[in-house]
Amino acid sequence: MNKDEILNKLKKGLIVSCQALENEPLYGSDIMAKMALAAKEGGAVAIRANSISDIKAIKDVVDLPIIGLIKIDYENSKRYITPTMKEIDALIEAKVDIIAMDATNRSQIDNVSLEDKVKYIKKHNILTMADISNLEEGIDAEKYGFDLISTTLSGYTEYSKQQEGPDFELVEDLINNITTPVIAEGRISDVIDLARMAEVSPFAIVMGGAITRPQQITKNYINVMKNKNFSFK
Image (cartoon, rainbow, N blue to C red; front, side, top):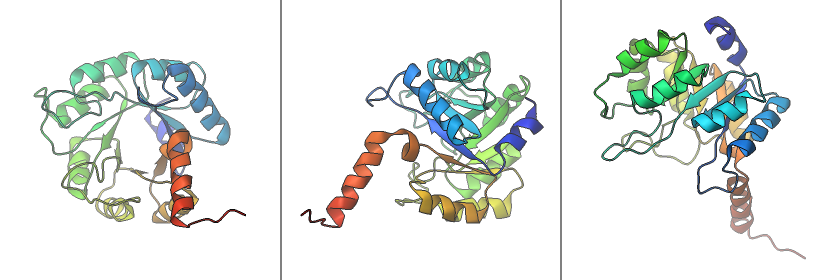
């Protein structure tokens, strides 16, 4: 698919993030592939996936656009979403449709600017998604040439808004200040959050843990039961 086809596929749709880390019960590429297939059958317009092994397994079973990223911790760096050219090259080789990366103002660790990374990726005819945490970063990301700007990291930088639920305000501010398509992502935990976010009218919405992390979903329900002091008879 070319850029226009991918963007048309994503527009006003639900993107499902299928990710599980090593310490989670559903960790494993075969499981994530099944999760992605289930998301597709449910109507997802794209899949956001972490790691080359998961991406390859998912691509084998679904034909949806893949937003690829690699989460990795480097010493003395707060960036962990596709932080260096090494991860970018791996994602290019895996032939993802979109590469997502940390586009916050935190320091680069490979001395390659965000702008140069975007230019490099575009030479390979792959779209770019900026994971940002505040309005300033979103405005900068547009200047750097990102194709999509996502609120993924709101609340995950020490200088961004810290709150429990989705950052509706940031999504709206981005829509009002940039022309690049805005993707709403982060702590959208139920249909109420989803409906309210849809009213803000982002280009598309990403949901992850509320769909693909049963331990998190179960914990949320347990907390509701505790907070409401349910009395079973």
